[in-house]
Length: 251
Image (cartoon, rainbow, N blue to C red):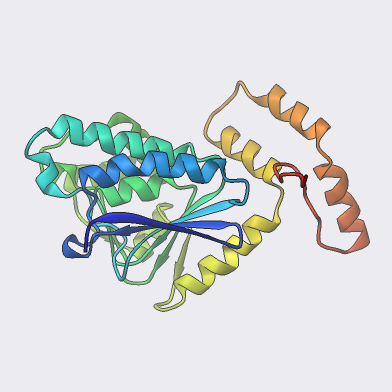
């Protein structure tokens, strides 16, 4: 089977699947190149309100296909950083659903998502020290923001793998599910995400990512939307809110 990124949209949730079964879903150069335009298309789709990134079968992603490093390591890193940044910039909530190995470039992609849910038995590793690769500055900063400098150094210096329980303790993942329960929990949680205010989510994502120049923009968006009034009314009337910011109007 050809290495590729598969995608589908169901009930307002886009799912992107990393598929390269011959190499435990390792990312080829073409897969790295394909991810940013794929994400651009999903971001522009008004039907998409959340994104799930996962791997086919029992592995999330074993990293970059090492054969891509033989020719030009610099180009390989440029492609992975561009894909990582495109994922981090995705304007709607993005969740990594992790089974099995999440290593190297796979950990880089998972860290670029907003949230990470893992199945028991998952293994995480940041492995450039095994290859003599200088890990990208953007990826290093993102890792430090998740797990703190001490754990980031442990992972980067050693290249050792950690289990899901340790990943949870250090903040690398947000939830760990028993074997066989990850898909059910991700579906349940994404239903929650798509029911919430896209206005709140979009502003919170930018603020959490350090955008200090956008407070005026989001204040204006809040004043011009009906989401706050609808949320308060729904709470008082004990019903589900019908948020409309970001929802295309018919006709």
